[in-house]
Amino acid sequence: MTIYAFAAALFTLGIAGMALLPNLLRKLLAMNVMQVAVIVFFVSLAFKDGATVPILGQGGAPRAAEFMNPLPHTLMLTAIVVSVSTTGLALGLLVRIRSRFRTLNEQRLLDRLR
Amino acid sequence: MGTAPPGRPPAPGTPRVRRLLGAAAFPALFVGLVVGMTQLPEFGDPASPASTHLSPRFIEDAAAETGAANMVTAVLADYRGYDTLGEAAVIFAAGLGCLVILAAAGARPDPPGAGMSHPFGSVVLDAATRILVPVVLLFAVYVLIHGHVSPGGGFQGGVLFGSGLIMMRLVWGPAHEGRAHQPAVPAFGPGLRGSLVLACAGILAYVGIGLAAMAFGGEFLNYGTLPLGGDPAHVRELATLGIEAAVFLTVAGTVAVLFDTISIGMRESGAPLPPGDGDSA
Amino acid sequence: MAEGHLISIGLLAAMVVSAACALAVKDLLAAAALFGAFSFLTATWFALVGAVDVAFTEACVGGALTTILFVSTAFRTGRRFD
Image (cartoon, rainbow over all chains, first blue to last red; front, side, top):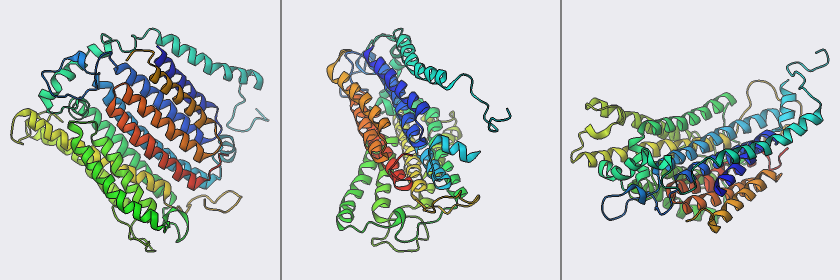
């Protein structure tokens, strides 16, 4: 429960940052924090007491209780790499926005777009 | 509406009320999330639904069916091959989006001595990079190939390989085609175009392996039918390695393209700049 | 590892603090460095709960690549958030 609460705190931090911060780059950082919160939550669902990492060692047939759940690990592994590629794309866009409008402040951008 | 600026209807309520509502929304969200999470199974409960449906089959049969001791690799590249194809396509699409940005802004290299394309010219950096880059690239390939029996695989290896490419770009200057000024050490490795070719080759190889499985009588991405010799588990192991290599190429190429999009200088085309300073930072 | 494991709680608390600092500072380079620290703490926590593959990915991506991308953006847009 404590761990879920920490994930909720990170998520709230990220979404509040996305909504309240004035600068688009800081909003992007906040979005990354939110993504990590979701990943932390998923990975915590994969944990099993008394289990080990999902890599088969020597020995007999594996039993399900001996290993962590590999499915959330797989999903979150790909999610992390997708998140970095979307972050890179967003940063490329922000560099263009900055060089064209001379600002990354949301309010000033809206004023100049009008 | 006479005084309101066009396109922006006035928000309801006074600014003070809105600010109070905004300040209350996020604590409320946090409390709501925590209250909802009390209904979840206990942390570490081996009998939770997430651990009793589907995953026992992955844990108990993965090694026998796919020959991969690392269950995450088995699930990633074999059982959930469709899903991984989608993820690789998203990453590739991000690379394509970068191309759109580059094309729309009229990409051109920075003039000599400006921007990131100028090599730093430091002997220490040059020597350190000469030692580090081969190690990083080799380790990336090791991570890819060893991903069956240890943590690692196409995604991690691809990111590491892309980091090596970025390191060369950072220290040795531009790797894009038609460089006007020769850096102190000639740039090595794929440029923007070469990175794109890597990414395209990766995604095509992924789809190609899936279609090859169809051509030999299986379903799309069901590798068991490929005529690679040996028992089915061994065939699946080889095909899984091929899938991981395809993901590796896609990720490595896209990562380099992302860095180029941020770092290559731009000549703004289209609308003139608004009045202001004229620096090109 | 029990629910209230001290190392796990400490890492999670440090994650929240470093994320809050990364969002609070007004210098892009400092924010990128703090975000790298946040990612590394996250990777350590993933390794602690047995998600070694996720920890590896997070260490490569968050600790290295995202930081590189943010720093090169800082080079282009200037360090100060406006």
